[in-house]
Amino acid sequence: MDRESALKGVFEVFEDVMDVDPSELSEDSTGDDVEEWDSLSHVRLVVAIERKFDTRFSNSEIEAIKSVRDIIDNIMKKASA
Image (cartoon, rainbow, N blue to C red):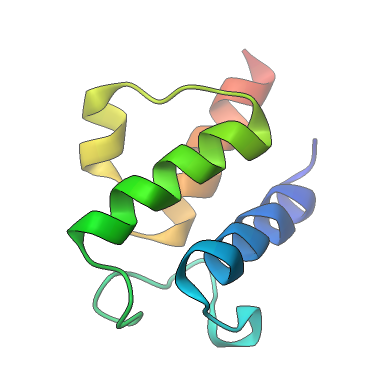
């Protein structure tokens, strides 16, 4: 999987979980930029991403996710493992 595919998939999850238009997102988007991204939606987002990409994040990885870039970096790291 390439980074662009992962990014597209993550944007689809954001749209589904938080009803956020993907055109409003970038790799630099954080909870400060996305009003709907609160602690509850963070958990729902992680679960949906784990399902979509058939992967699991550790508790420390989940806690370290602060931006879309962090999510993509984790997906890419797991895809290459």
